[in-house]
Length: 126
Image 1: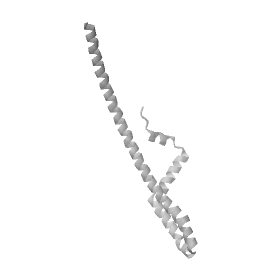
Image 2 (image 1 turned 180 degrees about the horizontal axis):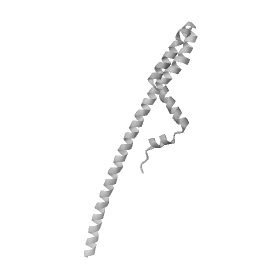
Image 3 (image 1 turned 180 degrees about the vertical axis):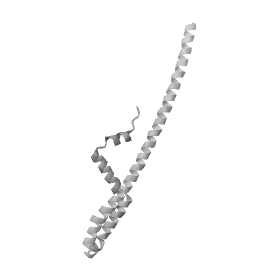
Image 4 (image 1 turned 90 degrees about the vertical axis):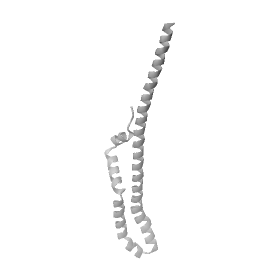
């Protein structure tokens, strides 16, 4: 029997797994990245006023961690969706190939049986 591993995976998720996926789906959106950008930009004037070290700290700790991480998650989510679509397409292709192979095997079996029947007839005639 052919397994649908995507369905099996979804069926095995615990409540905590589902919560993690839910949060990831929210944080991994461009809307969340925009919200984080606005949040980070609110503290930018104070960081600039604090000098070079404070500004660099703001870039590294606030902007990059909030905004860039969220945008990276968006990209990873898109790549994951593409991989899942490819896996589903491969699954469907494999199912069709399996059906074709089964059809060919039945045809081969019928050819073999016909030949065996002919051989048996020839032997019986002798």
